Length: 152
Image (cartoon, rainbow, N blue to C red; front, side):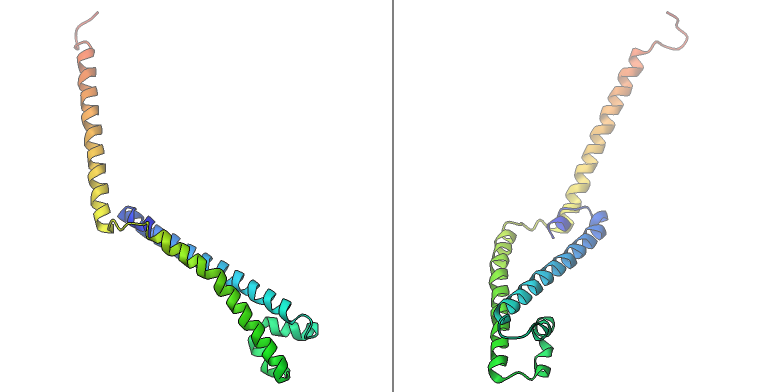
């Protein structure tokens, strides 16, 4: 949003596209990290309790649990492992959210429409300064050149 607030109106579509792309990439990375933590926690907590083929089914889908015909004690162990995995994911993301919140406090709202006016006026000032300087340079050149018809 900071990029959007500090951009020209003509660049806003590109910046919106970039923002959406970065949001999608962030979501993909977050989902990958969360899935990895979940699978590793499940594997580590259930490794000695179940054979590898059941463990593979448990780590691939939570919907496999009812079809495995586990005892109540085994089902409770699986659910405890899932809860521990979700707790670990939460504890990882909570400080990240806090850091993002603190960083966003440093971003000031300058207004989008207001920025366009400032950019346009500064560009006009630059153009008028450039045209004044080129006008002076042309005047100096015209006084340095000999008049037509005179020979040296």
